[in-house]
Image (spheres, rainbow, N blue to C red):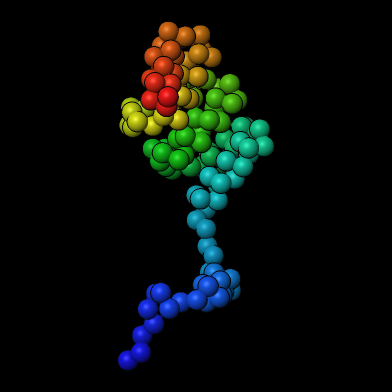
Length: 129
């Protein structure tokens, strides 16, 4: 039996496979919603992002990507208590998540809790230097 090894596959064969119409390209609804929410944030529309996120927050409230995107949208739309709750939850779940910790620090700053914020932001600065 003559079998093809992976290193015998040409670039043209790979390109043909990727471009093949025979492969269905189904993206889960949750993934589409998350991508759309991230795009709304990029367009500076955090409230639009939250509309896309609403079913995800209901059905997958503890998913890290959902929490992070929602926390960013809450922060950017000045819903600071909601941003605080999610960023605290993310830092508690993963203390090494520097983005979540920075978001927590910035949220605390905007809430006028500078002393609490300073510790989180200093920790990130020390690690990234």
